[in-house]
Image 1 (spheres, rainbow, N blue to C red):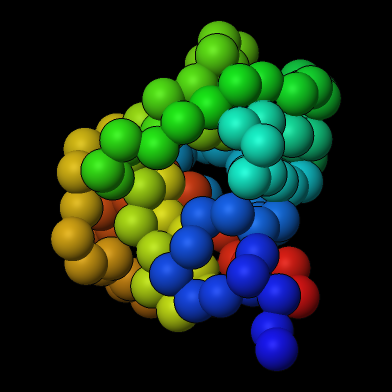
Image 2 (image 1 turned 30 degrees about the vertical axis):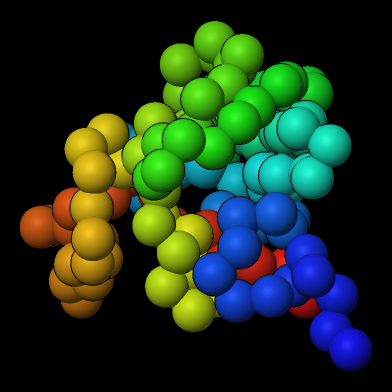
Length: 118
């Protein structure tokens, strides 16, 4: 049987950052949503410019399509999420379907796209 943490549609998994639609921003690293209510974050902002490294463990819960968390660093995580296949989209506003333009900085309705680590 496949691990429940890798079941399609569930946020409980490790996710790697793959794309960002915020101008002049890049993110590398991962989010790991665990069933015990902890979120492990390890990310580096702005690989092409001196940036901030964020690493820590924070409490979280899911309320509908919202992530409620103790994370207060302000970058790398948005309040709303959508899962489509093995992709997790994080957005400032609720979304029901991800808009994926050729260039994510032009017209995407999400801030960050992450892929499930298998």
